[in-house]
Length: 383
Image (cartoon, rainbow, N blue to C red; front, top):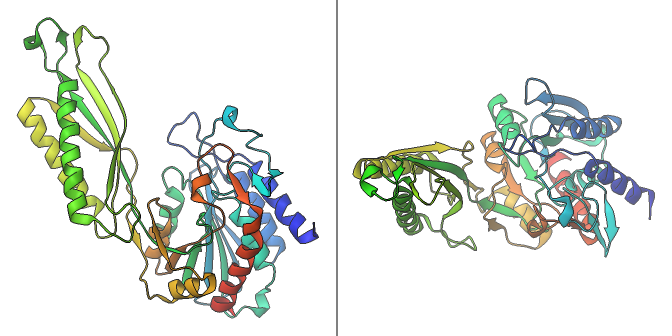
């Protein structure tokens, strides 16, 4: 193993070994500042100008904007530093210790997406600030796996600015120019509890929830007819019933029930408009059944993403990889970087099929092609 490869492995080992789970569950949620500090130190040693942007008031969650070179334009290589929660008992090795076997690097975040950073740093190491005519920016964000507050804060601040941005999410190095958005909603139905021997004593929240689910299934079909896009493997918007809770005893009329669902719109759909339609439908059901029905967001919605098929960045990525750009169902930070005025694609090493799974891994065979691909992109936008 060369010194170059040893440095990549050592950096990924440190990143994987530094816990940075983000979650809507406070029992799991952690900060990412230790990961940001590692990246900042490595990039500062390479001559990058370092800016750390606090995402939470205590600074435990933060973004990193590291810039080599100066001037307008240039290229952003972006990724998130957090991971999802994990069940250590389902792993064959320690999820927080990088393990090499079967030509793979196993560890939490190895594919999604701590593995991207050592490869982006390796690609950047071939260039100096003096050689760059336009800046190279490495961007590391907080909380992509939960609130996306890191990316939201960047968009609100209006930076960084560049001509183009590549988000290194795992796509097996195939360019992605389109993905669905996501909203997560809770529906709470409040009825009136009573003794089960006399239905007239109460108003069942569970029976009301049955009507809610039936209506949402009907609405799902309407969205499919309205917004299907054959560029996606799953052409229609999806609406998934994730979990439901209600009632407390079989001999008692249920007084309260709650459903959590997610909805993923294709480009062309508008989250705000759909949310308003959902609210209207729920209020209609509430009036019909004499129930209280509350619809509330579980996260702030993320919009669908689309980069034009004939944009400079898409055409370059297709030429360099030999793959036509694709669409994916999962959401990323791409809409927020696109809001900053940059042409944006998603393209990185590893497979999304390994993400959020026990025994997550990055294939060794992806490392050198990824570095070479990123270097070609840097030459195009920064030299």
